[in-house]
Structure formats: C-alpha cells, structure tokens
Image (tube, rainbow over all chains, first blue to last red; front, side, top):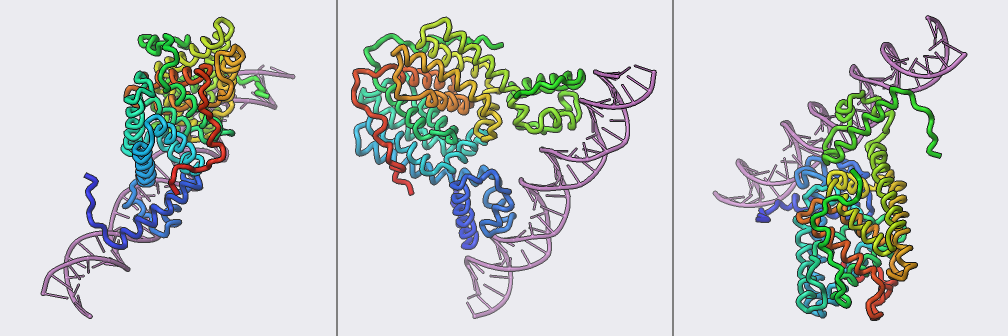
Length: 209
Length: 209
DNA sequence: CAAAATATGGAGGTCATCTCCACTTGTCAA
DNA sequence: TTGACAAGTGGAGATGACCTCCATATTTTG
C-alpha cells in the first residue's frame, strides 16, 4: 500500500512544483475560483501533466491536506508525551484554532472540500481523528474527562470551526467553542442527572413535517 | 424590501412546481449530482423558466432554506414562551439534531451550500442565528448560563453537526456535541480559573510554519 | 374581444474540464 | 559515451454543463 514506485527525475520535479503552487493557492483561498487548466499554467506545466499527477481537484487537495495532517498529528503525539492528558488535549485544541487562524485560506479550502463530500479526504481525516481520539482517551483514563461523549463529538466541533471560518469575529467564537467543549468534557459537575441519552428514541421532535 | 409584485397565474404555478421538486431533490440529497437543466425537465418546465425564477442553484436553495428556517424560528419562539430559558435552549438544540436526523439529505445540502460560501444563505442564517442568540441571552439573564461565550459559538457547533452528517454514528456524536455545548454553557463549576482568553495574543502556537 | 403585458421553453453559444497522442526527456546497458 | 527503450510531457480539441435569447404562447386588462 502507498506503493512508492520510483518516479522519474523530471516527474518528481513537476509533482513538487504542482504541490508547492497548490499550497500557495490554497493559502490565498482562491482554489475554487481558479480554472484547473490555468492552475497547470501557473505551476509551469501542461494540463496533461497536471491531470496525470492529480486526476481531480480533490486529489490535489488530498495531497496538500496529507502533509498538513501529518504535522498536526506529530504535534499531538508530542504534546501527549510531555503534558498531563487533560492539558495536552486543551493545548492541542487551542493550537488547532491558532493554526487555522494563521492559515485561513487553507482552512476554508479544506472545509469546503469536506462539505463537498468528496470523501477523498477521509483517509487524512481519519489520521487526525485518531490523534484526537488518543488525546481524549488518555484524558478519560486520567479521570479528568467524562467517558460518555466520544472523540467524534470533538471532531464535529472542530469541523464546525473550520467550516465557519468566514464569520466576522471567527477567532473569538472559535475559542468560545473550544472553551465549551473543554468545559463540557470536564468530569461532571456535582453529578446532576442531565442524561444526554434521553431522546434516544425520538426521531423528530421539532414539529416540522 | 422583499417587494412582492403580483405574479401571473401560470408563473406562480411554475414557481411552486419548481420549489416542490427542489424540496424533494434536496431531501433525497441528489441536489449536486443533478444537471441543472435536467432539474427543469424534472419539474416540468423549460430551462428558461427555471433560470428566470431562480438565476442560480444557490437562489433555489435559498428559497427552500427560507421556509425551513422560518419554521425553526417559530419553534424557537414558541419554546422560549413556554419553557424556562435554559430548558428552552436545550430543547431547541436537541430538536435541531432530531430535525436534521429526519432530513439528512436536506442537512447535507445546506451544509454544502454554507461551506461553498455562496453567501446567498447568509440572510436565512442570520434569522436562525438571531433565534439562537435570543435563547442564549434569555438563559444568561436567568443566570443559568455563562455570559463569556457568545451564541456564535453555538452556531458554529451546529454548523459542524450539519456539515459532518455523513459520519457513521452521526446521531450519537451529534447528541454528544449538544451535550458538551450545554454542559459547557452551564454557569461555571466552582469558579476554577480556566481563563479562555489567555491565548488572545497568540497567533500560531501550533509550531507549523 | 382585441391589444398589451407577461411568461414560456428549448435551440444554440460559451466556457471549463478532461483525453489523447506526437514529441521530448531521462535512464540504463553495453 | 552512445543508442535505444521507457517514462513523461504539453497543448489542441472533443465533451458536456451552464446559461441566454427570442419567437411563440398564455394571461390580464380596457
């Protein structure tokens, strides 16, 4: 898997150029306003070459996303190794927001791709999710965090933060979400019986037909 | 504004047919896989007619979204009038999840449109956000909910829930997010000093260049 | 009922996407 | 080094979705 067939020298060079340009365009946020053909020109290769390396827009995005996620995962592991579990989780989540803030164009692009449901990003997402899952699991084992809400919920919240990145006051609101998640995760306050499974069997209680 | 010029009888009929079909296709989730021209056929009108009534895909979506949001807002007001503030908020949020669950195709479609940043949905979103803002404000006034995290954060979380609707175990995770948000919002536990503004000045603490 | 106003629909123009293949570049054995 | 085979290139052009335009049809009004 991830079969690494030795790439020819020029092919390697072109691929690199494509990726570099892609990262650039991503960060600028213009990924979807740009004709795909023009993108090839921009990177200094022919359309054919572009399409051979990355058959679709999504494939290209996936490639960029991969590095991004790898870096993030490294950071997660590093935090987990050097900090108490709860603090590691908190720091990681706060860091994610900071990172998105510093790379808004990229955040927006990725969010769009996710929502578009391309599914090509699923693999990369899984890696990121695994990292979050580990952080949460460690915090649960420490007894610092409740065990009745999974890491998936945290992922959803992060997803929401990324997807909404164009709101005015994004940064403050994003920090707010993290605060809510973190406080919400903290082991339950005075054990009052707010049961979150009470609506298990209700399908649509909204009154809308 | 929203100038309502009397529409000719057949025009009205066609418009209705278009909207009806749109709702149907939305719910089925196939809104983006369908050629826009074919959609006209499907609704039994010519392409020209479709484009006159709804100049773009987004315009059509906006129309459907509008009704949806109106219903939701009504419900919010109704809850606010009949329940204690905190309970009204909780019930509304839980209800949102139930509603999305019952209309997954629609939820997915809307999430996609939001992320696509069309902006056409901004108006409808604002209405929904206003409703949430009111619910939160009431709960804050009651002293049941913290005042240092705005309603925008709640919107982001909802956004994430909608956007991620294709995850396996969506329902459980969505309920989890709501639980976190609700517990996180609850007036602060023992006043321990977890300050959520501490990273105000940090731009990128993720260590990624 | 006739004329004026309003709406229809689908044929065809426009433009982004992607394919295909004649040609260039890199690799390797002798 | 050289020649020959493999691997890669790039851009012209086919494809097909989106949208416009206008001759025709329907509604409304005087």
